[in-house]
Length: 112
Length: 114
Image 1 (tube, rainbow over the protein chains, first blue to last red):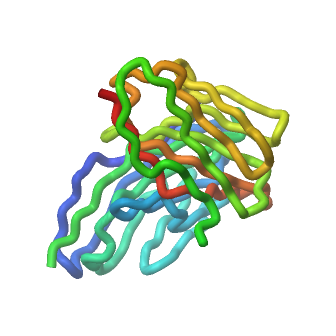
Image 2 (image 1 turned 60 degrees about the vertical axis):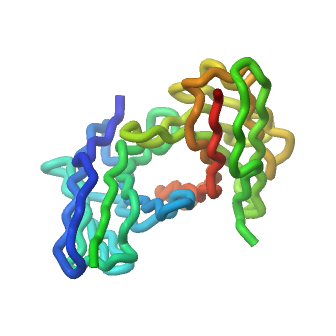
């Protein structure tokens, strides 16, 4: 079945460092891909999305490119801030049953 | 006001008790979902409903039941709670928008079963 694999956390960075969180997927066809973010004490919210190969999703300085050849959707940000500390979830929309499939989440902690 | 609300936000209960978690939404979405979140396991789907007359099991439905009382309300019940059901529970909604299927999450209910 469809699945999503993320790099394990926690990831600890200093403010203004470069961030990469790896995400790869297994799916039939070409699913829509998402990054969700969960700030402390809150529910998940959509950060960015991409619907087809080579699409780049971006929001709040974060970017991710849909790479069909490597089945990847890595999240990047050039300069992280303390306020970016959160748990980040990669997800795909599975055509098998019409559901979102989430990765296990990666906790990011940014220190001043 | 929040678009997706969950009650209660926190609950501590004992093994064997019946518990109901409630979810309400004002987004007018037809699809609603219940997930549980455990550290290191991400979110796992418990049940989902595509409209009032449609209920579907997710990957971990054993020990849970749901009721879709109206388009805006979707309740999750634990008939006889057990300690390994201690987790953070999220309700979510979605509506068809092209091929994106974005989901909107409530703030979560932290359930502890002693």
